[in-house]
Image 1 (cartoon, rainbow, N blue to C red):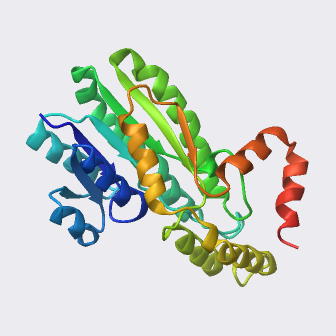
Image 2: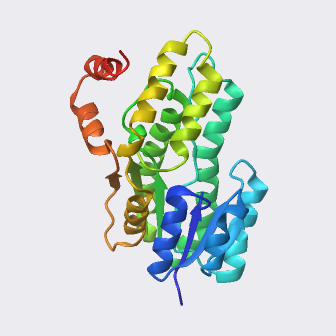
Length: 270
């Protein structure tokens, strides 16, 4: 019997790349996302496509039940869905801040809750949470995004300890800069929210730096392979740090004091 993998946010980027990698490794793959029309290529390769809106509890319940009714088991959950809501703390609405947490934390937590009973009964399972180097560092105008990823890091650590006695492993993948639509969406949102207000001059510098770095970003396939590795290797690490600037920035943040790291960031905005 094939092992079964669920991947959220499988309509593009790292999620889609991971879906192809896990299918190559022999898994029965269920790609989940809101934009099911963007997953026709997965369907064409024999993967299952399921609609999933992480802000809607009924949608989450239905998605997990769909897999269980067809397969009767779940071996891997890759919590990949998420987005970056950028803008100054002053100008991002609390409504949008709550939506950022709804998708990046609470929706992720809910689908995890729903797969755990099956994994416990199997006495096996693997949960891979896609965090970010942004769960270890901070950048201007990313307060709400970083808040969700900092939260995901601690949440995942607690989960790992709780489920270990049941044969379930939890791994965190912390991508750096990757060639996906994530960055463009984040910067477009930043300009929309804070591009004309009191923070406009700093916003312009941040957007310009993001544009200049595009050619340096890590190909999405590299992360697809890393996520698939975290999902399948026998003794997974607790964390996988991969992608443009991920290791140097996280290392610097670890060893530099707050003020020094602040100065390093601000020096890039002169």
